[in-house]
Image (cartoon, rainbow, N blue to C red; front, side, top):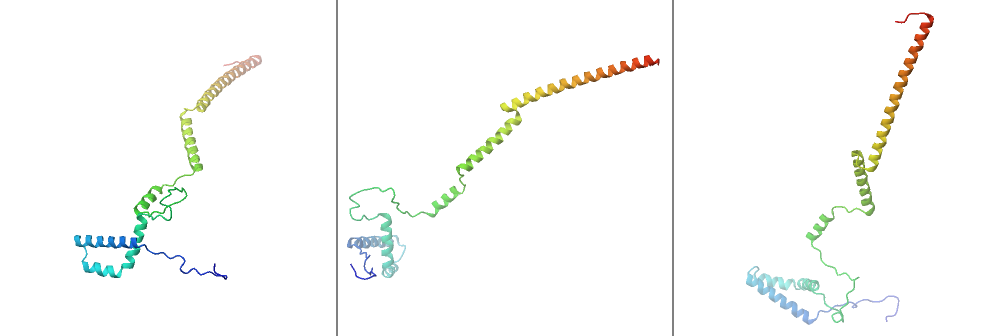
Length: 187
């Protein structure tokens, strides 16, 4: 263990490529070159120039491709198979699938409270419509009460009319008696 306050991290995380991986990369490059020659897409001189200048970049891209295709097991990982539900493997997402997800998710999903509020408002509007049509129990009871009240008012109006006629008749008989008592002729 180093002495002192600070530690040196140089050379700590170096990664060396296996000779097997280097051979595999070389074989892959050779197959690609042969395929291109057969197909006739690019000239061999361009491939050689490109191969000499971009050897480092191609090796990096091929390593990334191989990591994406198959993840190399570390230690005894390939011997012991354990599924960790918390482990998430990152996968490259395609732009087309993201666009589809955005289109699908463009419709806002309502929370439980908002859904309940909308359902309550719909039920209230439906009840008001049925009540106006007279199809609910409460509306039938209201219409029955209204019919009873109309009947009572009609009976009361008839009674008042009869009382008015009786008062008028009583008034006429009284005036006739007064006129007779005074001796005046009635017409």
